[in-house]
Structures are given as structure tokens and as C-alpha cells.
Image (cartoon, rainbow over all chains, first blue to last red; front, side, top):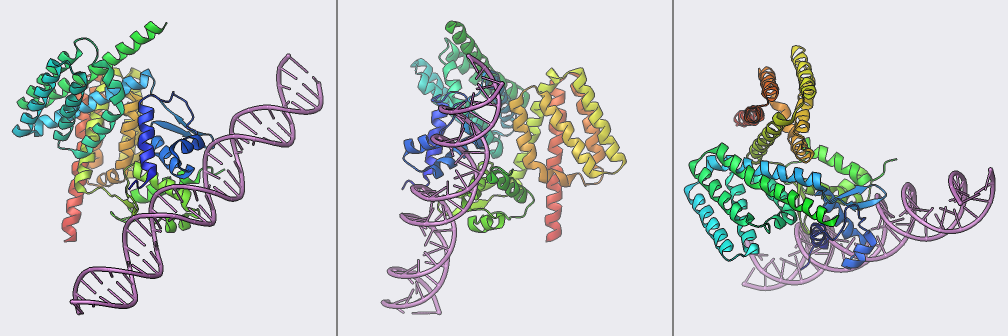
Length: 218
Length: 218
DNA sequence: AATCTAATTCTTGTATACAAGAACGTTGAC
DNA sequence: GTCAACGTTCTTGTATACAAGAATTAGATT
């Protein structure tokens, strides 16, 4: 049943890179990884190609492929881009969303609130994801939706941390409410700004977290 | 000197797909293509993987990879996304661009105008590209810049046509001027809207072109 | 004649073998 | 002791060989 081991390995490798199992610049040794996954170099090389294609690694001809963990600067840029893209989704969604879809968002928010009441970060994280993905979808542009999902997924490991900051969940929740009302009002610019702010602040919180860790390490 | 034939082949294949050499759904036969490029299946398969990763083809396990030309709906979605992303670049650039950079844009526009005066579509096309790429860069966000470049490149074969429409070059030119003045004024929203409109209209013109072709074919 | 089935052929996916460039260590000269 | 040149070893890139699933065709049955 396990057709196309190369794909499975690519997924596993992506997870490993996301999870920070490799440091920036680490060489992904073909023979070692092949041995580790119990396959030959052929499917493993295909998996490496996929990592390179998705930007998780860099390939230097005749040298090998090296993991490319985003540095602080690139991370901030990625968060900013995510914020802008979510803003775009919000802008379009404000013009196109239906009443039923709005109700779905309200329901999602209720579940977010419940998660907060239970102080369940994981649950909030999951429901938050549902909320955002649904807005991507409501942009009415499935190409844009896919692009948003791609970037969202890439930022996943970095987004998680900032929720643990004191009060961030409640703040995030109130931002959600503001977003829904902007969408309900059908106001593209307000919706865009609300979503931009909501996501951009994640990047800022992340930055805060990073610098505090750095200071602590000194 | 031709290290990594797989990459060269991938580039050639991308060009072929872009150029419309393959119809939607065509299977990319590994052995035929390998023979055509004079290599074995191994590097050719790597090239195919790259096509799949960039969305130009779809892979069905144990069946093969099939080219995936965007249909009218997806194309419109891509143009809309491009318009929104360029708008984002404009928004950020309006807040960050320097006087010198503005001068560069003015120079680029001058060359665009010259191309119009010479009725040189190709030249206009090239200078137009310079103009847009420079704005991506002036967003001050190199991650966003790369994403914009990627999509811009993907839409290249479809953008070209609409310039041939009567009066489009002149109209495009005046939009460029408006964009620069919005950037100079440092007005993010106006710049965003100007760029959105400038690119979105390309999608509409393209749509017009497509439907006129369709009608003509009937 | 149509359709289901089985066998053959074809194609993809993976393993292995081979070639060539890069890294590395050793030896020699200064 | 340092540095450079050479040779060995290691790694990547490509070719080929093999295995297994998909397509196709021929044959049998209704």
C-alpha cells in the first residue's frame, strides 16, 4: 500500500526540518538518510528535491543539499507576508462572503472561546486554524487560498509559541470578533486591516519571544 | 561544464510547458523525453519532480506525470492574486521607498515611454518588467519579493498577449505614472489600489482576449 | 457481438553500479 | 612550522538493472 516511498520520506523530512531537528546549514547526507529510512538513494534524492523546491533546503551542485532554516530577518519577512496575504483574503472575503459562511465563522469563534475558557492552548490552536483557513476559502479565489495555506503551513512551527504569551489568546480572540464584524459589514479595507494586524502581531510577539530568549541565553 | 543536467532539463521542460507545447492532461513520457534529451530516466525524473513541485504538472502515483495547464478560471484567479500581491508590494513600498529608488522608477518609465514612441512591444514588455520587479524589491521584504517574482514568472506567457490590444500600452504607461506619484506621496492605500488596478486590468484584458478567441473559434 | 478474464506488455518506482568532481590527508619543499 | 601539490577517499550525479502495478490485448464464455 505504501506506494511512492519518496513522497512519504519527503513528508517525514519536512516534518523533521519544521521540528527543528536539523540546524541551519546542516548537510542532508544521502547515504545516511537512505539507510535511516531503509531505502536506496534514488527515492531519497527525490525527497530531497522536494525539500529544495519548497525552500526548506538549498542544493549546491556536486556538494549536496543543506537545510535552510529561516533566520530572524527572513522569519519577520515571512510573518509580514503572511499578514498581508491574510489581509488580501479578508479584503476579498468581505466582498464575497455569504451569511451562512459568516455563521460558520461565528461557530468557529465560539469554539475558540470555549478553548480559552478551558485554557486549552492546543484546542485554541486547532480552532484558530479552522477560522483562518475558512477565511482563505471565503476569498473565493482557490489559487490564493492554496498560496495562503502553503505559507500558513510553513509558519506553523513558529506561530505556536506566541500563543503561550500571557493574555495573547484572549487578545487574539477579540481580534477574531472584530474580523468577523468587519466581514459582516462587508467592509473590505477594515477587514483587510483587521486581519493584517491580527497576523502581524503574531510576528511581533514571536520577535519579542526570540529576543527574550536571546537575552536570557546571554 | 554542464553540471546537473536534471536542472537544465527542468528549465527546458518548464519553457516548453509555458510555451504551450503540451496540452492540458498530456502525459510526460519518461522514456521518450529521456531519449529526446539524450539522458537516462534518472535525471529526467528529477526534472519532472520539479515541474510537479512548481505546479506545472501533476503526478499520479504509478501512472505518470501529466501537464496541468491552468484553465480560464484558474488563470483569472492567478491574475487576481498577482494584482493583490502587487498591491501589497506597493503598499509596503509606499512606506519604505527612498528618493533615489523613486528616481530609478522614473527612469524606467522614461524607457517605457520611449518603447511606446517606437511602438516596440518587446522593449516595452522588458522595461515594464523592470519597473514591476523594482517595486517588488522596494517592498523591503525579500521573501515577498521572491513570491511576487515567482507568480510574475508563472503568468509571463499570459501577460504578453494583452499588450497587443489597441491602446493598452499607452494606458499601462499612464497607470505607471500614477503608481509612481502615489509612491512618491507615500500613500500606501493609493499605491496599493493603483497597482491592484494596473495588474487586475491585465487579467480582464486577457479574459477579453480569451473570450474573443473562443467566439471566433465557434 | 459483447463482455469478462487472463496473460502479455508497458510504465513507473526502486535498487545498484559506475563515473566524475570535491573533500581530505599525506608528503614534500621552503 | 607552514604551505602547496599530489593521491586517496568520499559524495554526488547519472546510467542501468530489476520489481511491481497499470494498461492492453487476446481469448473464452454467454
